[in-house]
Image (cartoon, rainbow, N blue to C red; front, side):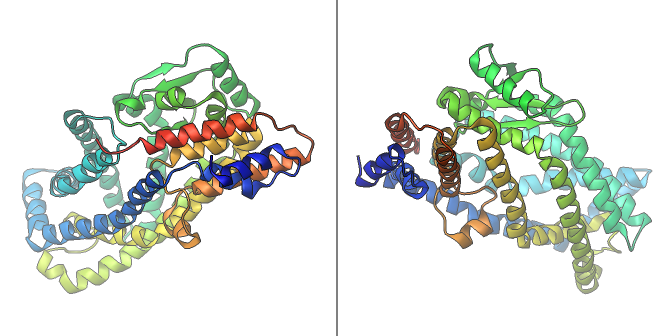
Length: 432
């Protein structure tokens, strides 16, 4: 055992519990190689943000410069009788073409890179099958949404960005409503959690916090990944408490309850509705930004590209390029909003489940693919969840408050031994 671990154990067992010392004791259980691999994986994601933007812009330029977009529009307009059909067909072809052009990056990012870091359990044929299924869903959803958005653009030229925001938020709510019942089961099997103490504890936690659920479902994430996950999802009667089989198989009951307390926090604190409001504001600004940038680009290059105005479906590659630039620039803002909600759910989960050490060891498990100790600026820009260090420290600070209020702290050695076992699991997660 390292000296810091011994110091952490002493702090946990002593009356004067020190959250920082206890946090460092947990962090010290991660060996250098495991931490370096996790850091490399997560930091690689920073570059992928830029790479994805560059590839998206290059594809948009290709479709516009070669005349593909205007030629496709003209041929569809001649073939199809109605304008809305032309729009829907154009969107469908656009989604398929961009997916094909970006496929090398997609297969690297979604399959080979995940296997290189030991995070995926899928064979290539299985991954291709799921990717194809997701592509079909994207074609259908994209065609429906963008057909309505373009109708709005043509009907309200000056204020289309406001109306398009309303349409997009409504569509998002519809997707959240249907996903748990109709879409999620396409990728995973959902089965009721077997009766027992864990199921009873999860339902008791849900009922104590006003969540209208009478069952808990397990979904087989292990068919895709070895990551742990859970959620309380759905709207208007489709609310469902779900946790991955990897969470049940790999985590102890106190960790499961800590994770479920966090997920229930999102529901109880109305984070979904809060995110709707935040998303609406951010998207409205994004559409306004897109409107201005599109008009500037179209004045300079529209004649060459054959785009009449922003309501011309041939300008879809340009419109999507403008939106992608906006969301790239807004990354720190988006991450901060989400990270703030996640931190609120963390506190809620600690108060609800009352499992600070379970929450700390769950954070250690996540370190197999999340950098556990970033710098402050790095966390602000790139993290959409609090870092592992922040979460463990938060849980230890909560625990210190409970101890100060007279709660007892036992089994410190057992918890630290378990943290070491989890660290060993993380250390053995590697390339295949």
